[in-house]
Amino acid sequence: MFARLEELGESEIYPYHMPGHKRQPWGRLPPSMYQQDITEIDAFDNLHQPEGILRTLQERAAQLYGSAECYYLVNGSTSGILSAVSGALPPGGHILMARNCHKSAYHATYLRQLQISYLYPPWLGAYGILDAVTPGQVQEALDREAGIGAVLVVSPTYEGRIADIRGIAKVVHRRGIPLIVDEAHGAHLGLAEGFAENSCQAGADLVVHSVHKTLPALTQTALLHVNGQLVDRGLVRRFLQIYQSSSPSYLLMASIDNALDGVIREGDRRFADFLGHWQEMERRLGQCRHLGILPGGGTQDVGKLLICVKDTDMTGRQLYDRLFTRYHLQMEMASEKAVLAMFTVNDTPEGYIRLTEALLEIDQELANSTWQPVAGKPQRIEPYEETAGREMHKGDPGWMSFSSIPLAEAWDMEKCQVPLEESVGRYAAGFVNLYPPGIPVLVPGEIISPVLHEKMQKWIRMGLTVQGVEGGGSERYLEVLKTVPKKEISEPDNVTVGV
Image (cartoon, rainbow, N blue to C red; front, top):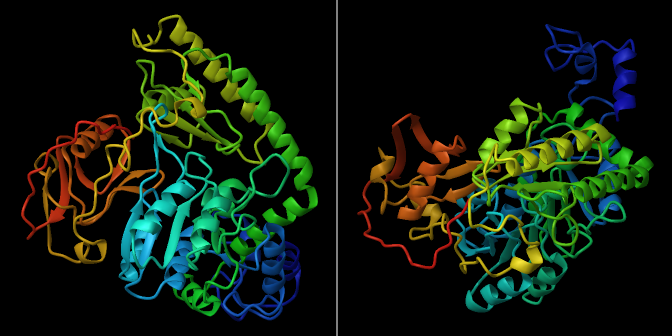
């Protein structure tokens, strides 16, 4: 598509149409952007009724990923999740969804007034993250809950945990209902040897990919795939028209085409290089004695490097800041116990080397007591397979509350602000997200527990971004339901607390 846009920009055709820049430069943006930014004109098709070039490009994307149909998204994976959930269930339907879903999934349930039952992923305490939902959990929930109309899970998770989608799909399809997979962080999966299969290949009915997250595409670009006969495709298309802009950016759509075209033309070589650099980095980081590295491969996505600081005096935020200020390395995320670095097919060899050497140097500083490991704690982080289940509290890692008032009701109820320190036992009136990645730690209608209250204060002190808590300094406020009485609660003894 970029070739066609370049031809148009160099042609004698004068634009007596939108957009207002008329393909002429303005201000400091590159002139080429203006030349290639157009509206729906002759020969360039219409995203909401594709019959030409866009239809061809979407069909090519479907073939690449192994889906029956594919739709370009210019409003990000958010529009894909909204459309998938809205198209899979009728108003007031019942959805079974993983509690670690992106906030857009919750927004979809609110808009469609859905009844929600949650899947609480296992808690991987050694690294302070949620693991992927398992087929057994889905089976147990479907046996327990009546009237489920669709299932929504996340794979890979933000931190890279990959679910057994093939197994989950079999469980869900035995009930004759569709499986939706938020695979926003897995647009690279299934495209080359050495990487896990994608959810289209594994049998999911609706799959959302953020092309911009893990492939070389512009921010806000994504895909929605549709498979099987369990979803009304006409209804999905209707919601795509509702949730997507009626003036889609051709620059963004060309960016999707450019990324996927590169995969088709030279993906085997580029992904092989990616895997080789990743494995060499992992091999060298195996020398770390104090920082823990969650190994890639198997159930951990290649490209998501989680570096744990659990057994040191350093916090995740301190490691994040040190990598940025001293080494000029910008991490994806900092949490209480870890930092996350993302690698893609477009990283340079220098990128792997710089982070590897910085982490080895910091690890050596820990050994030389510049930062002291906490006395009496093991300095090695065991591999996931050896620790699974040991630090797990069934259904709750400590910071997740449980719903008492349905989201569809609570978000519209009368609300008020209270000081954060007075919020324990109150019912949340809005979302609280630890950002990134935008997964709610508190959903409207959930009770604010003492553990969560303590964690929110700790996250704020550590400098993490806690969306939904207003104010600054010592004056922090939270929106709660005004007319619902405060509930006296106590914490269970066996709750594992984590980020």
